[in-house]
Amino acid sequence: MIENEIDAVKWIHNRKKYGPKPGLMRVEALLELIGNPHSDLEIIHVAGTNGKGSTVSYLRSLLMEEGLKVATFTSPYIEMFNERIAIDGKFISNSDLTRLVDKLKPSVEEIDKNPKTTGIPEFEFLTVLALEYFKEQDVDVVILEVGLGGLYDSTNIVNPLITAITTIGMDHMDILGNTIEEIAYQKAGIIKKNIPLVTGNIEHSALKVIEDKARQLDAPTYCLGQEYKVLKSSSEEEWGETFYFENEEISIVDLNTPLQGLHQIDNAGLAIEIFYLYCQIKKIKFDIKKVRSSLKRTYWPARMEKVMEKPLVVIDGAHNIPAIKSLIENLQSRYADKKIAILFSALESKSIDLMIEKLLNIDNADLIVTSFDFPKSLEISQHDFSNLDLSYKDDWEAVLDELLKNDVYDLILVTGSLYFVSMVRLYFKGSSQSMI
Image (cartoon, rainbow, N blue to C red):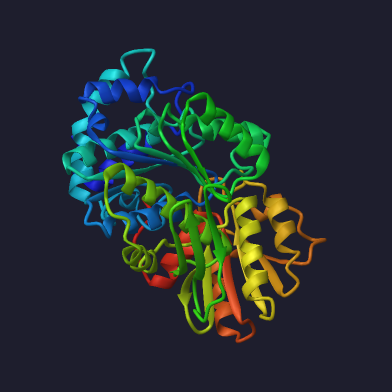
């Protein structure tokens, strides 16, 4: 019996990361065994390399402003495991998590007996648990974030109201493919027949793959730069972005988001277009005043998040090459005249050398590479940084303490792996909570 949340999370983590082979057969079998809770849910399905979390957060704010009960399933977590499954921004409780793991455990053991469905991995189980929880709680709408790829992702079991693809970039190449087109094909796997698809800032070759798939399935497409547009506006706002949005029916000037970076304008625009379609489908009035107020309240941790004012310390989970490029674009746009210290660490599975190479091109920044206590995290001893214009130290806390004491930099930026950034976030918030 699962008696508490620690036992529950341990039981989940003890499932393998990946199944014996790709496919939806395990999650289909488990869902069927518990009564297919997903069949009664209205779902917006969101895939993409980067920008999923921010887009989900914007969209949740927009939907909640209409008084809807909004469920979200996201990954990875920033501070605690429970945040991956939430309703109206409130994480699943420890008691509900424990109860549901205990409830579903016998069904998992049952499908494990079948060689065709044995070995349901951690993420597939979590997907099922989330869908069961959302059904129990009688939510109005679920925003379901893809874990990896799309075609074979366990979330692709659903029949959504709307699908969305945020961006396509080179990440998880060992699983999704070595070209932008191969990765786009995997993401396009969430497209469903006759179901509207909204796309974000996607380069032409990847977008062509997606549009071809949508055409085959008669899925109406709404693409950034075509059916809807966004444009950055000048602003007196100290933090965040101001922008203009328009689609074929409406235009809105001077929208504000507290999330910083040009890519956040794209994410916000994508969320607005999804919301606009949702309003049309559900026959809800699209209220521009509500759109303005909900965007202003949107919050998503570890994305250009200010964790200290003096000195200015910002954390940003730029965990792959596309995210690093967006980060650099933001730094060059806003902090070109500032002296910056960048503290960076990542997982060994990422393109560490290329990420470091790009960060070294920021003329007004000093780069410090570090390590952190996490499986497969960067090991300084395994890299030769001696010929590079950077510092490298194992103890990130000691580095931060030194940076905070010395009044040298206008901005201290911590970036790289979301797992690393999450640890730093806890450090600044004075939390002793373990990342179970």
